[in-house]
Image: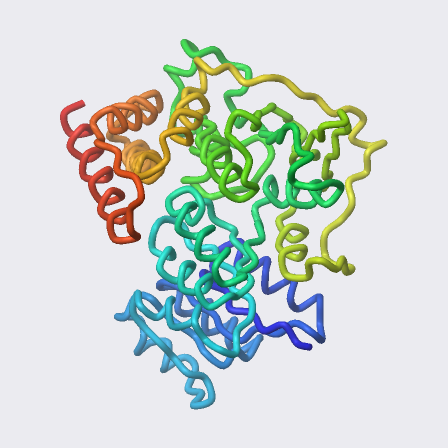
Length: 385
């Protein structure tokens, strides 16, 4: 049986790596649909290489240019934000890989889950923002939710060694970013250039800043709680600067199972596509003798306020996680634009959380309303800062 795959966000780094993985897997895996927001030239190049049956460009103003570039009547072209849902619901597609940052991809993710498809999730928002809705929908339809980000893929792989009820603790590893050795006081004076200089991964500005604040790990705490049905109290974060051990699972018999790999997204992408099988792929195994040593330490909760906030948010549930994520995204934009200082990012997030009246048992529409509220709130607070 051929696995037919739709990639939502094919022109980003995850999408590009996914195409590289699929190309290496060969027969048995085919690209049926691709989507991008506005990178028309790159999308057209991908279409010519992988020959999908359907493509979507969510910025409708780019449709004409895409038609001109392709000139192929055999490729169906969809456009506009709603085109993502159309791709996710295609009967011919059995696997949807989603790598769309922010809340824009949520309707498509929920649509794919409702149709019972395998969902390979690369971005944190579906589970952080709509974890309750998504997991409930997957339980009803039989949809498989498989993680693509390296930490949750590592947990998923390690959990194959035991039963879910036997898990004593999940340990998320973090590179710690560029400020892992700084105190809360020292962090107050860091610059944008310093915050963007990640010591291990080559990432975009938003993810680099999230690593510097450790907000990326804070969101992963919430994500892991939903994905693995584990109380947040059983989730711990350790700084691991080598980024070789991607996460660990401790079982009730005191066994600790870890997944190791080079800092390369191809391996977790491939495992989500081929699970439960393992196949040769482009990833390289870590050379432990050359690495020499692996180090672990606990993060300073005063220096990285995002972590204790994540535990509070996860216990609160409802719209708290939506506000947590959206306020951070908006605050990072303000920092990247030079309108606030690095230390103001978490101050704005916390202030936003304090002002928010949390709602529980909410719909997707109410979650998106909370997302918009948080962004407006941060913009107002940043102007008055």
